[in-house]
Length: 163
Image 1 (cartoon, one colour):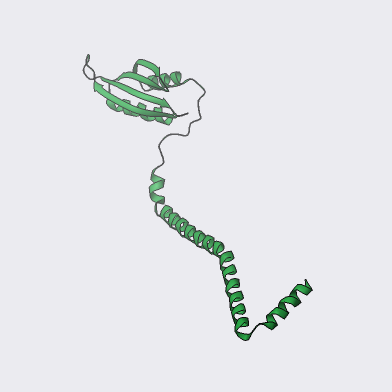
Image 2 (spheres, one colour):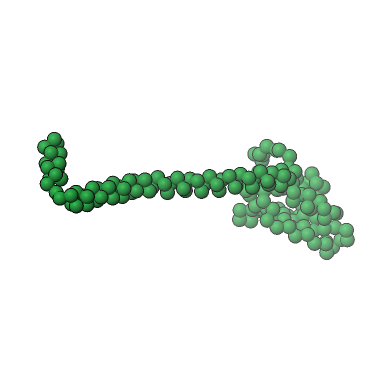
């Protein structure tokens, strides 16, 4: 190693002044290019992280501004435990508890279609809310006046399982 260094120093000493200047300038440019190439990924990563930080701070500020809106989004479902009883039994019990008459309850695909009669259309809306609170998705509600009796409402609810 020492001999290689001495050979380089001897060759450098044999060069003219102008050639030494070019070699030094070339070495300096090579060193700067090497530093630029090694530092460029770090600088890009730093600027990406700074951009992410600004975006996250903007998101955090927006979330803090929306705190009042989010607090109003809580639902009115009581915290109830998941029931192990079959879905048909649970839905039948809910309908009876709300004093509605169940005409038909049939499973269709991944859900249940309920046909019921009520003396008040608002009770149909309440039962839909209670079904949703029990972990079902109410896909559709159709409420029509009864064709056979006055002051009665026929309702059809399509309910699907969440899981």
